[in-house]
Image: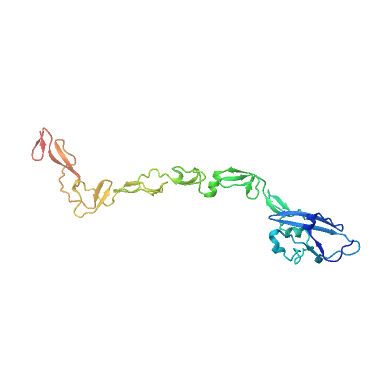
Length: 305
């Protein structure tokens, strides 16, 4: 029996269901699972002794219908009657058209999901089982597969330096790692802060002035070194005190004046006589007698035996 030139109808579902094996045709059925859909391919080799084979335009594929899909198949028993398969595609084009677009993988990756038409094409690249992503402070050990590794190893120094290039675990003398600005992966790494050794004052007390530059300590507090205010241009008026309206300046615990009261000039001795009791007059810089020592008599401001 010969195949007519009428349209050849190849119904894959019917042949598989009832086990028909046509004597004039040989069907080779394959099933490929690609993601969520099954792609059915039917390779049909027709033999005819004297009549020519049907053209591709005369071949139609039967629609595959499910119970819930009857609206899709109503009056349409040929699923691709309006869009016949492209028999002019070569195997590489068939693979690419069906989503098998990859031909190589990155170092460490393995191809998966090969195209049945051409094994050089596949669907995806995967890493070996057990590979994982390493996140700081852990870093991959050995060869990488994309961004994954067979194992991860802790390296807090590297993680801290990547977090902030100023982080360190070694500070200069008088400094330490700032506990308020340390690395979250390892608190022994961080920015160095000044211990401000010798800077004993947080404010400058009266009678003193700042000595040199201030210092910012690890708590963010400004600290100072101080010295006694020299009060240049002012003088210590001693017990006399300042003149009326004189300006003052505190030098340590001493009040100095820019003008002292007039000196009474009571001082007469550069040193106190051994027979006398004396007081020192600051303004004149001399001693004056206030009495005689025991055993001495005052003879008109002169003490004698």
